[in-house]
Length: 338
Ligand code: TYM
Image (tube, rainbow, N blue to C red):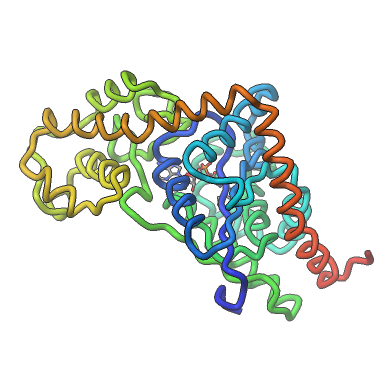
């Protein structure tokens, strides 16, 4: 079955494992908001079960989950238009993940580059959950029969695995039950790079705070980080081809384009020929103008955590109207007595 045979439905998630950063915002959340306005049902998720695949302090996890919900809402995700949930409040994710643990093959999981990156040199000490993580991610998506998943470039391999799991399940049981979900990896900011090193992804696990812009940074901090961002000594080119061997320059132009909803070509048509001494203040001004209202709204929402909890409880109820029947049908297909 192709995704067009299913209700057009978007699912995506973010880990509540620390501050949201500009990569999450441009690569994911901003896209979530635009898909919410299109002809899809949209489900967006704080993936707390994924977060605990590495150690999380319980109080920090609770805080970060609420803060991530505030970040979603402050960025424009409306609990009226989208279903907003915390993963552990919708138990069918974990239940379907078990079935998928029995579908996915060891060899597939061993090829996951994110596991290798995250487990590092001491893979023996990594949690079993970190290894099984992509099967839970496939369950997150398929327990909604989601047809489209907007993500940054780093999640591509996990989405290919999701399709492999759906294909094998459908084949093994002789059904056309799970859709082959389409990854949606588009725009100028599918891979926002570190401000300190254009070869490294912007990430919450980078020990240098100067490498990323956090959604909670104030205006001065944002401006300072951009001023200090690594660049090269040349002026900006007038065409995209001129950015090819210039990862730091390309990153800053990509960020500008994504923040301002422009193409890279349109940005370069305006700023081509400028030195970084001129371009960086423009970028800082744009970043502050776009991000400050979001961080202020996040702070306002965080002043009333009970309201966030109410929104998540309502979201879980709406989500389960979708997930309970899909899980029940899955159990029936597999042969479980109910
Ligand atoms: P996570 O929490 O690491 O990141 C959340 C989203 O942000 C994107 N992203 C970036 N995009 C551009 N540039 C960057 N530097 C950058 N860093 C992060 C990620 O691609 C992602 O879209 N496994 C997922 C969470 C997840 C999920 C899912 C996503 C769990 N279940 C089901 C989609 C569908 C993760 O760890 O994302």
